[in-house]
Image (cartoon, rainbow, N blue to C red; front, side, top):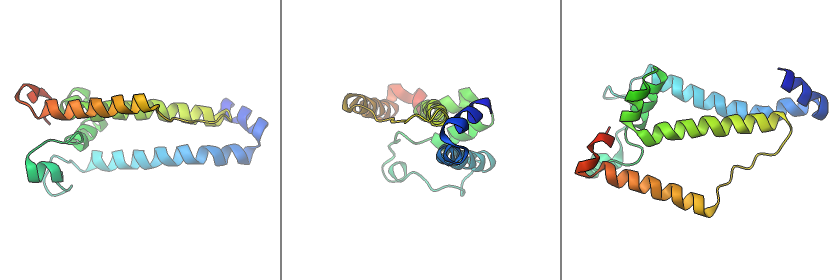
Length: 145
């Protein structure tokens, strides 16, 4: 709370509280989603809709297994979570780092601009595409949820 007090002294208490309300709201929404997925097991049929791509084509999308991975991660089973969807677990970790940077910069009264360069965006899309292709090939069976 010392950082919050220091930020409040320089920008005004109400300005700082208003500024951190958005990152805290995002964290609350994500935490609520994770709590729901932790409480309602996606491995049990009937609680969540099926992936339309998997249902109609039999092809695993990059998100298939992400809810089961979130459920496993919420229960402290990192290995199981990675086995369900390694890309989703990496995405959860990236979210945690980006959110922490956003919150800390907001507390200090600094602007946070998380924009990716076009090259980084293409690389990310290429990585997700490669993940999707490999998990649907016979030698990528370890990536199947």
